[in-house]
Amino acid sequence: MKSKINDICGPKTVMSIIGNKWNLLIIWHLKDQTLRFTELQKKMYNINPKTITKHLRDLEENKIIKRVVYAEVPPRVEYSLTDAGIAFIPILESILEWGSQYMGFKLDEYL
Image (tube, rainbow, N blue to C red; front, top):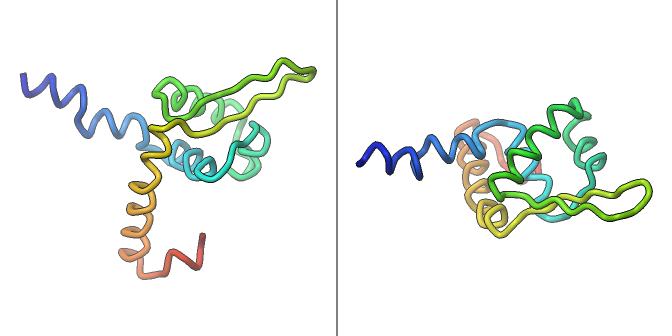
């Protein structure tokens, strides 16, 4: 029974959702604003569109971000955080704070 509980809500699940650099960057860039695909891509140093699309879909499937498509020509698509994504921001900020202390620099100078 314990193994099944760990599979459902354990570190493995959390890491599969937020445990890579692209997902964390996407969440970070969406923390204060809604962004279109190209805006998000530019903020992420012009990563490959295929890569960002994969990670956006993963985050959407896990209900961390939401995708809104507007019926316009050309189509407009916007991404923002869901309530679950917003709830993760304080955790992400704590991780960044810990990392900056560990590396010996002030986080405020880089944000």
